[in-house]
Image 1 (cartoon, rainbow, N blue to C red):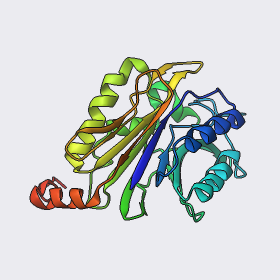
Image 2 (tube, helix red, strand yellow; image 1 turned 135 degrees about the vertical axis):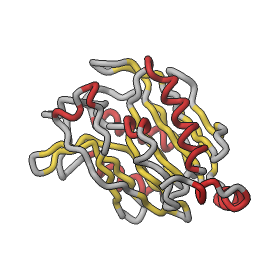
Image 3 (tube, helix red, strand yellow; image 1 turned 60 degrees about the vertical axis):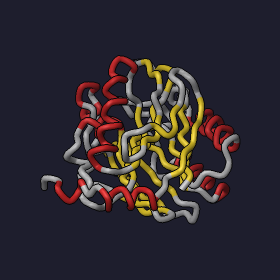
Image 4 (cartoon, rainbow, N blue to C red; image 1 turned 90 degrees about the vertical axis):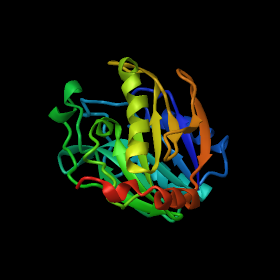
Length: 249
């Protein structure tokens, strides 16, 4: 599977402009099986979602569905969603056939007040696509290894994020840790630029099960990079060095 990460600056609360820019970035990088976007890619990370969150007729989700079909690839990223009077930071994984899997962020960022307006999800979500089992996670979830502990149910974790510059060392270290301890690929896509509250420098990467970076984006730069997920190599590594069999329950 070919995975492309899209490290982007995000225009505040402007889905149409952000989607236009993402369209251009994807078109510049044809041939991937999966395109991964940052957290709240259409609006920027908001803790006050009134007037910003999208509803059931989400323009962003509609675009993801259309773009997945047009490129014969999956599109993954999170959107601020309003549903039945509640707000969710919802990660959508959209397949080219139109199938949509969603994960609502479990660990809301209390330090920034996300828990005051958003409702936390309570269910782990994985999706299988082109022979790879994929775990969906959002930003602050990265700090909680028990939640994402590999139970033999996935081969790759996707982390989409708006992770601020002052804490970027933790982002980089924890992504490597999650790959090593769960014996899986890890994809981390963070934004660049700034919003009304924070500045962001990126640090988007794809990491293999040994903890090695196999794709990465330059800091403070809008760019894309790609890498291949080698399932044969992963399965051989797990068989030769079966760490997960000795894991604590």
